[in-house]
Image 1 (cartoon, rainbow, N blue to C red):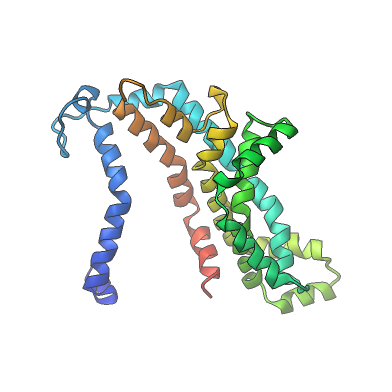
Image 2: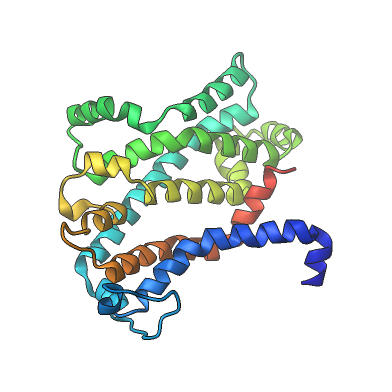
Length: 275
């Protein structure tokens, strides 16, 4: 701890601790609600519980609706990540390893698209998906989510592909007779796994946390993701806060698991953009 204080300084350390506390405070509140009996939550309560109970957590894990919402969120998030990688990898490869007129303008145009609010395009997107006859399917949410997160992911992968290998390596592969397709899939992608992992996680999180597209394009209760399911579980006359918070905490488990399992490639990928 003393080494941290010397490195950061007392002021920066205080700001860091404060930022961490603000980040985890919602989780603390949710845990506080989960470990108390439902009848206690219905009345006056203390921040430090006097009675502990895991009834809300057991109810959430045994509720088929909650497990279905988690499954639906996972499907949407996985499809979003897959679409982003399939479309973004070829685009990032061209932008990173090839020079052509308008390349820089195209990169700037990609960033500009991020200034468009999703709500502005909801109506035309709804009409387009209705024309394609894919409304009320997970694919409708995944395609739109992928379209909105794709520009940023292309920027990330462009940086990864540019820094992963030097131009000399590509020229050597060309002398050996490797085509651009072979160089991309046999050499560049294997050496860019950390960066692609970071991009895939980002796209997965975007699809997992989607709210507005799922709310607009999905009406079948069996297809709702966790964010919409928990929101619609709020009753007209009351709220089961314990079960609601337990379901929310369950929704964080896949994301936390991904970060724990993929921490090293994620850190390596993010470090590529800082050098």
